[in-house]
Amino acid sequence: MLASDALGLLKSDPLALLVAAHVSIAGGGSSSESGNAVFGLGLPASMQGIYKDSCGRTLPTVQIIHIGKTMQPTKFKQGTEEYLTFSAYYVAMKRMSSAPGGAPTGTFLTLSPYEGGTDLCITSLLTGCTFGIGSSTDDGTCLVSHIQPQAGAVADRAAMAGQTQQLFGQAPDVLVEKGVTYTDRATVIGHRLQRKWSFFMQAANGGTRVVDPPVVL
Image (cartoon, rainbow, N blue to C red; front, side, top):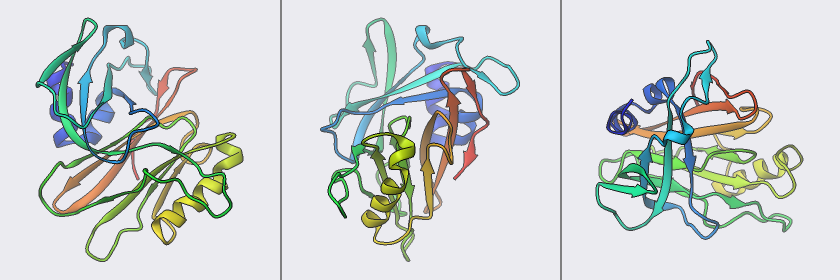
């Protein structure tokens, strides 16, 4: 698989990319905010030949990295590896609030169903976090958030679910939670098609290096 092929699949059919490759997303730092962002996509040589699907077939690894807000040239190098740039909405990962009744700021994002802008939504790799989707509004707008635990995924799971609901103003349609929806780590990608946002998840195990078949959330 070439980077150009992977980027083409990501833009047109993210579910197909999650079937064909192991996808790892490195998000921005703690100061990053949700909104429009620029990413790079590559297939680093050091990450190839590691992950397999549930049938034992070796998968190429596609790495997506958060660059920032400013568009870069269509290609750039990080070390010896070449990356292709693209735009997407970014759902920033923020640590859960420790205050009773609190909720983290800077992670909540409203995705419009209408044309214009980008049709992709990207968030950092989930390794213990909770990703919320919905509740969808009457006009088809979709709400999303990404909350990081304080102590640990299992211990903080109920609190993260509660803070997601507080951010949305009502119970979310979908919660992606460690120990419930995924076991070790998960990649979540959103795609807008015909004025509707759909989200796909690829769960992987960093110990066994096995990638589960992707699912529609």
